Image (cartoon, rainbow over the protein chains, first blue to last red):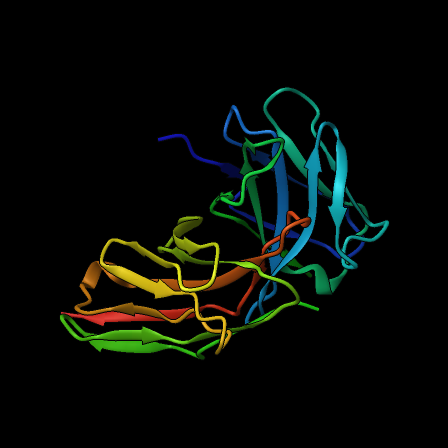
Length: 117
Length: 112
């Protein structure tokens, strides 16, 4: 069964450093998402991406964050200058197109645990 | 804004016990409701969903009914197994938005 994959599974970085989290969505999906979960808190939506542009983003997704689909398979989340509060589990998800819009069913990867020191 | 509140965990049960994990929501309009499950080391997987009032979603022996009058979508299973040990997330989505709004998750441990 096709699945969403994410790399790395864990990343430790120093405050102020840039990190890039990578995701390979399911191959025929057209919508891509990033969510995060700070320890002990809710899973929070960050951004959705369709047709090579951001289609929706949350207040969390400020200028420090960016997303990119650099080729036909990868979808990345970049944090330019990490802060301590960026420590979280980051989930990538993808969904296909259903009747001209994103399907309600999103398929999630296993997550990348980011620790900022 | 829209929000989901689910029962705090962790929940520990013996095999074959009954399970209920409560979930209530606050939303404008008529959201779609979901339960996702995360097994250790894996991503969130859709367990079941319901898209309108009184719909019942079911999968793998789990059920949840969309109750508009109580704004609830409680997850139930009559007889849990050790393999059901996981974290369960209640979520909603609104028409016109692509995002899922999640609850905090409830960790279930089933002992043999």
